[in-house]
Length: 224
Image (cartoon, rainbow, N blue to C red; front, side, top):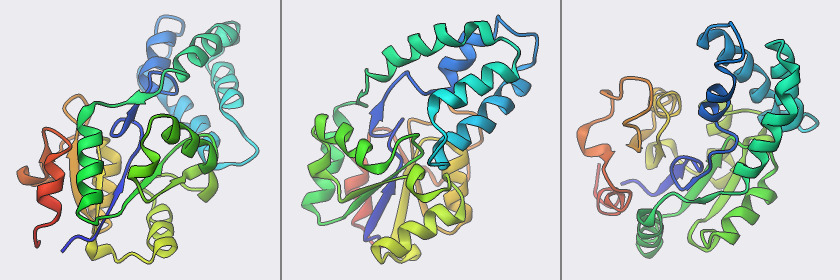
């Protein structure tokens, strides 16, 4: 029986246009001659550092990305736009509350594992403001671990910190890389909000693909 859930935060429980690859690429695509693959390779390189290095922040990552693309003159404008969007963090939709409340009533702990460029305590203030903190068991930010999903180190940290068994723990996500990574590490995986994600999710059984998050409540308490 599945006794615990590890879930992503942004894109599953909460939503923000700020700090997203999509927003970044839409802004720079007409300002550089580099291909999308080249642009995102540079972006991902520096953003990964901001998620995992304690002394390297988001603004430095974006600055270095614009320098790497040789379009430094647009840095300040993008940063201003993005800071506005970053403040608009909202609960993804009403199914989030239904799922978290249902799992809490069933006694199934939910651990949030997020790639975020701020420490865990800051993420907790966001969840508290949105009324989600009381519905989850705990939150861990990659900034405090030094690794990102779906690295084995990130998941091993969660298993060790909370005394979880991999065979009894499921992962809920929307990103192909993260869901696939958790699956390959041996976790039972559930996918949601994945329709517009790049990647083939056929490895996820149909009964583990969620149309609405609250569907998870009924599925997670059944014996595997």
